[in-house]
Length: 122
Image (cartoon, rainbow, N blue to C red; front, side, top):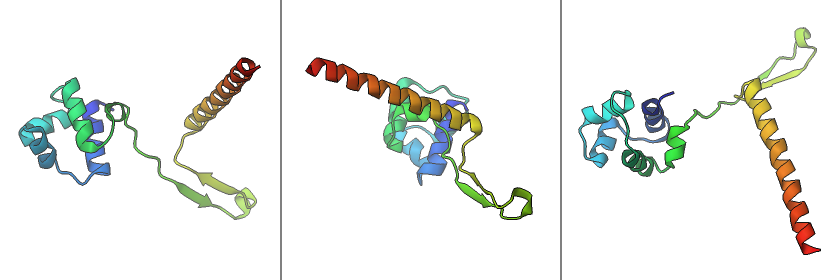
């Protein structure tokens, strides 16, 4: 996604604002704001901070925006899967693997920090 797409997605999915509302707060025309969302106009750093303030989020959130996962549970209790509960939680297998890796890395860092603190105390 490009930043204009992210801005539009946040406005539409996480706020009740219309393009006109955001344009008015920014002090620009609705057409100029539409150009931002349509990736026609570039977004300056100062404009990014203004948008973040309007959307009540950080500029980083706008830049790295990803739609929130939808959670769907599928219960297939018939002969084909021998009664196994299959659950899809809105993440791809790669996303799950990345999250598990991040978790293990964080746990390792925590162990290291605890060891460092313990050695300083002794």
